[in-house]
Image (tube, rainbow, N blue to C red; front, side):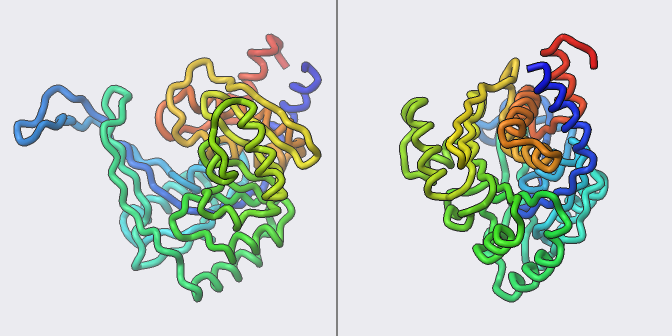
Length: 328
């Protein structure tokens, strides 16, 4: 274990050299935070006295945010509107030093925005603004051309699918065909887009839907993973929230990793953290087993935080050192 941890610490130090492209559905998360002290006289609803508003990159852009927090060289490819939310996305990408030359704008499209009203750590309401129609064939051809010329420049390509219309079968299949290390956070509706990718990372509910099998017990989770392994011809990592994760490799290996969180506070965005940590680790020379070990630590850190959060390379290293009880 000591030797493995020393090796992993060196890999984490190499995150700064990783070049990773994220392709997917960009979102903007807005948190409206305040106090609730009374019920409205107009209707039986709580009145929130707003104290703070906060904007955070969401969806595929949150994967970029996680990669940037890990120290990777990161680029975003996706689509936004020309509205105020889209301008805020561009501002946040710039602030996070995330390359945005492959972020496309459409005048007729709304930027996907999720507004969460929160009081005393509890989410009271979520309001969504979005356009989910599939991009037209002419725009697909334009984006395909841009991507074909760019993906060879990256160590890893991450596809982050939220089923908002950007990721088409043509785009996904081109990426999988042109790059050997494609990691996919899928939506079950697009299952057939993702075959033969290097690694697919559904959560347990998504894995169940993709495999067409009900979740019953631990043995059943193993059956679901093996079914997907066979169907997709890809390595599979199933995330199970506070219960950890299961890795199914094409070589037949199955690894279960229990959650490392001391307290499960909020699982929002944990899947984005997992795939970001996997991408950074694989780009830094990790095996799938080593990468899943690092990703599990990163997820444990994030689900112990509130809201759409990230884990840094230093936090993961500290987690390893604290467990080891040694100073490197």
